[in-house]
Each structure stands twice: as C-alpha cells, then as structure tokens.
Length: 115
Image (cartoon, rainbow, N blue to C red; front, side, top):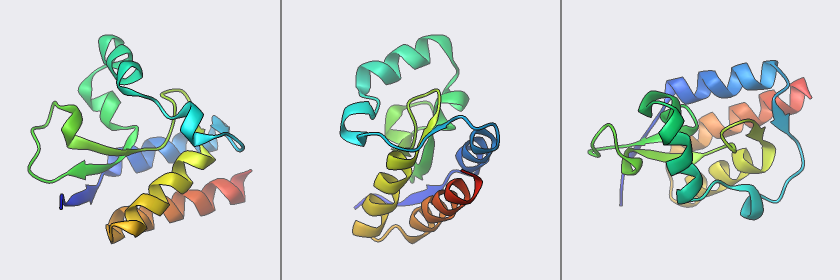
C-alpha cells in the first residue's frame, strides 16, 4: 500500500479558499470530482506546484512532477467542495492514512465553522 504525507501547500490553499468563500457546500462528489482530462486541462495552464495544491496527500516515493505524486483531491480546481473533503476524509480513514485523515477533518470543521 502506498504511503502518503500531508501536503501543507494544499492545506494552506484550502484554508485560503474557505476564507475567500470559494466553496461549494452541497455537491455530488461523484459528479463533480475532476477526472484525468480535467487534471490535464488544468496542467496546460498551471504549474505542477499549483496542481499539487489541490491534493491533500503526497505519495511517498513518486516523482515530483507526476500525477502519481498527488492524491486526495478536494476541489474542482476552482473551489473547495465540502463533499470533496468528506471523500478525502473517508478514503484516508478507510486506508488508515491518519495524517491525511486528520487534515481533511480539520479542514471540514473549518469549512463548517466559516460557512
């Protein structure tokens, strides 16, 4: 099983977006979660660093500028989705990635308090 570290840049971006009220409180994550094509389109106009800021997890051992390096996407490359944070929390908890789970939970609590 892959190991993941929390991506502090992603946590910071999520917090900034929440503070700027750039979030969606109700969405079907299965419908709005960005797919590979959306990730490719984003990368055509943005850096790998910016792409990474949308992912709460960094995959241990993966090369820096690859999609494999980034895990646990929480937004649609424009806004934080509450359902995306819930999905990150659930997936991280399911596979016992405790640090990512805690980061997702803390962001979810922050979003709920701010909204």
